[in-house]
Image (cartoon, rainbow, N blue to C red):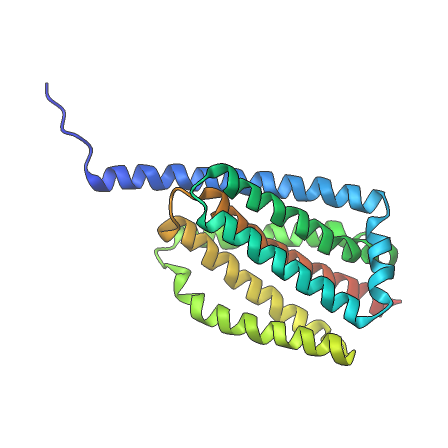
Length: 233
């Protein structure tokens, strides 16, 4: 009996499903690599050294942040725009290394003032990301409509961080809480991009964007736990 060829929509759905699986496989690899690198930097004292170096001057932190943003932009551009899967994966790898480096002084600080904070922050971040992922996959809403708001909010937040670093004032728990909400919006946006829109030949690039949003959330969740632990002393 003659069977009809799969329709365009069926092929497109199957391709998208394979892409989603590949993107989350890359994401899992990125998280594993970040964990290993962070443990190495922590155990070898790289984080403490960087923390001491950045504490010497506010401009050192600004320079480090600027370098991270530049490397992140280059890595993201490589992962998003290269036709080569190897180059896309290299871009993701470079970004993971950059994230591990910028996290190393924060992990070192947590180890000194709140040793349990890292585990708590990872647990809370995993719960939040899991809930947001479930929301994006089970609801019919396409959360990419958040893109414009997130871009504006991101620029405002970056400006506040730079001004705070230059003038030496703490942005406080309220800012960290707002940034966790912002990161949650980014996770919803990136997950919806993967589900509906992201080019299916660039799974490493999709993983990079989602990994960046998850890392941003972890950063500010950890800052909240550190602040709470410090205020209890």
